[in-house]
Image 1 (spheres, helix red, strand yellow):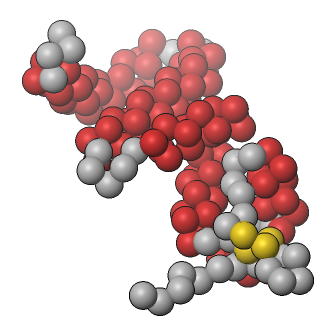
Image 2 (cartoon, one colour):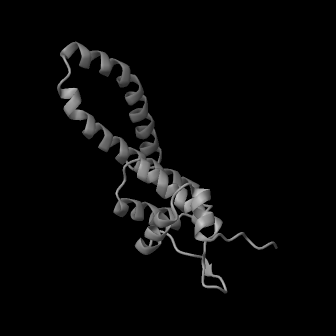
Length: 146
């Protein structure tokens, strides 16, 4: 079995498209940790850490706080390959929370729209929203949650 590749901070930063300083910060926060140390005491990170970093970067783009990211990563780490459904449901939950935050951010703007503007806006999003809600209801009914 071949050894899995290990990366020093600079290499990992380049692959993850973030700064080495950010990697140091995430390491100090406990969001990531080195696989091991080299003979010269360099921190070495694995491919799993790279995947974890990419997930952190995406969650930051989606406006999650570091505490929310830590919670998400803890859930994500508990999901094994046999629990794909759990992973998908966790992802779905996080997406719904992100959408809720985005709607709350838009609420002041929507409240300032003229009635006809608001009506046109809602006509465009209601069919998609209704389909999403219907899919969630079906999923919840099949799983016995309702």
